Image 1 (spheres, rainbow, N blue to C red):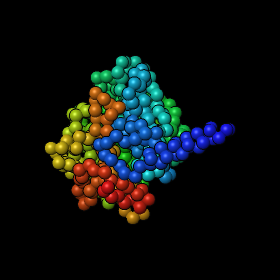
Image 2: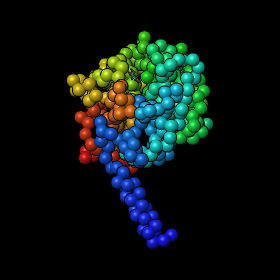
Image 3: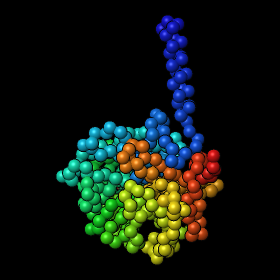
Image 4: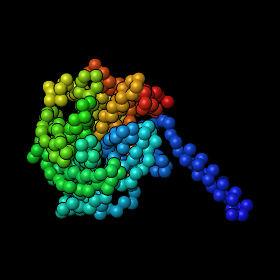
Length: 328
Ligand code: GAL
């Protein structure tokens, strides 16, 4: 290498390193673009978080601009701090599983890790363009970052199922939360291998979707949104001492006139640290005409003694080791 190329090479290394450093983030900025480690806005809409060891995986609907419309995609990102996310690829790239027709739907993927089988089992909403099929789909992978192989689609316990949510209790028991339009919000256990929905635990007779649950200080909190499609509405919560209920009345989680600050619930994520436990509200701000630009609201909740409240979104940071968060 002559001296010119040597210095060019060194300068490039320095430039690349400083770009990488510049992209290291310490603050979560709800409602803003959220760049992954490559600087691209995270595409993991209607998503969920799966923690395996110290790593968090964020799965969601990949809705990047210009995707091949013959396929549906689920993305996977990983992080150890919930703030900096590395794109691990589209772990599902699926064509119409069997004659669902043009504009068929794959939404709200949620991944359960089965410690016994060591498989990653993805549940998702599968539908046709008019949302009349109302099924869950299951795909499975040996690794968190795919590829996930589609296995089957069905109506859980014979019921309609649209938005799916995921809840793992403190004892590790996994539950699927699914919206059954005629009846309400169902919570059900999975089979040992997680490949089936096994038993209903509760039907909450409330017409809600974007369902999510957290177990905090001896109380279960369930949240959901009203059925207004992509348009935001006042999301609500109820509490119960047992998953099977009885559940309290549903109450607002934010000032109702803000329509949940423009977001729709997708998950409640509990971060148990050495000093404290923080529960994070995860929501989507949908932009139906420019889906790739849809944003996220992640905010630590005010929660406890039967109350749950999402503070107005503002920049914040979290220390996943201690569980502490602070406003920035
Ligand atoms: C919402 C639902 C989204 C998507 C959308 C389509 O109510 O939560 O996942 O299905 O409707 O209109």
